[in-house]
Every structure is written in C-alpha cells, then in structure tokens.
Length: 247
Image (cartoon, rainbow, N blue to C red; front, side, top):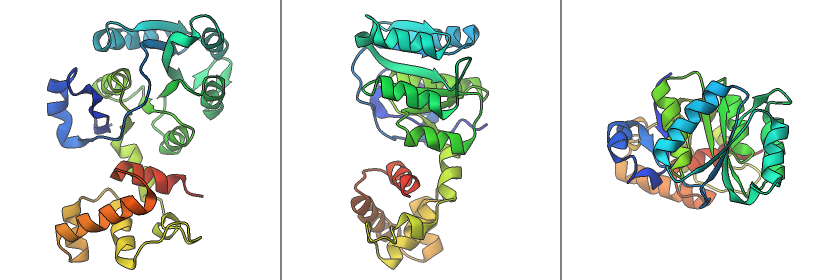
C-alpha cells in the first residue's frame, strides 16, 4: 500500500525531518483536542502492543502507557482509578470479546471525551469511513508498510489525525455530487461549484480541475473557498468527510 497519508501539523517540531520527506503526499486534516499524556493500547496481540509502545516511547517519552488485551480489560482501566489520566485510546476493532465497529462505539460511549484511534487488520475503505463517522481520530492499517504504520501511530501520539490518502479518495470517489450538494436544500451551491466539487471528490488538484473545466486555477480556488463556507468546514479533507457523512 502506498504511504500517502494525512496528519496534523502538531508534529511539526517533533517529526520535522520525517515530514519533509512525506510532505509531497500529505495534507493537514486537523488536530484532536486531547491534552493529557495517558495512552491506552488495546490489542490482543502482544507483539502489536509492544511495537506501539516503542513508537509512543520515541514520540512521547513522557507518556503514561497502559495496555489491555480485550475490551473488558480496556473498559476496566477506563472506569478505574487510571481512567482520568487517559487521553487517547489506540483500539483494535477485532478483540476476543468484541468485533467490528461496535467495539469503537462501546469505547466512545464509555469514554466520550477520550480520543480514539483505530488500528485495523484490514484497509477496507467502508470500515475506515465508518470509524471516522463514529468519531475515530485515526485509522491505521496493520498490514501496510511499516513506515505507514509508524507514521500513523506517531501522528496520533503527536496530537494529529491520521487517515491513509488512498482510503479517503476511494470513499470520496463514490459520493454523488448531487447527494453531497444537498438536494434537500440544506446546502446550496451553484452549478459551477457543483462541477468543482465533483472533481474535488475524486482527489483532483486545483490545476487539474482548472484544466478539466477550462477555467483558471484562481477561479477554482474561489469556488473551493465558497464550497468550504457552504459546508461550514475549513479544509478539503473536512469537506469530503462532510459529504461522506451526509445521508
């Protein structure tokens, strides 16, 4: 899998050299709001937990790290005396006592103020979008390139939001522009803005969009800015997610 990814600018100081190499393929998607230094790693594979601990130790040497091998143990930690110190949970969705998106839902319900990042044995874009729609701050495939896995974990540890580029564009490319534009009347855009949105949802750059539509890149920028205002978001990625989340 290609190592294209989205992660926040909060790592700028800690991972500056790594980001220079990746910057050609990265965009800022946002930041999560947690400020604590407690991290709960929930995975039934000890080797995965050990690998995550190593990444966190290098990224956040001041972090308090907790481990759980199943959901029951994770919930016990979250509601126990250590719970208030936990800011972020890194969660495997396939645990011995819980499977699939329900695992994320249960953790979010139990600890709504805690940031949750998902590690997954699959790179299925449907599952990835479900995770984002249910409040996950990251989706990190386990079986991709090791650098991608480290980047995803490091992004979450550094306060970022991580989502592989290819999964995002796969999901976005299936969104129908008329659906995204709100035929119900919630979101009103012009015909030309709809054309720009249709191409933007395919992951096209401003330059490519301008070529496809026969308009200048500056005009494309104006249309994109208008779309961001119409949907109440501040980045292309959030615009795509807003479209994906619409009924």
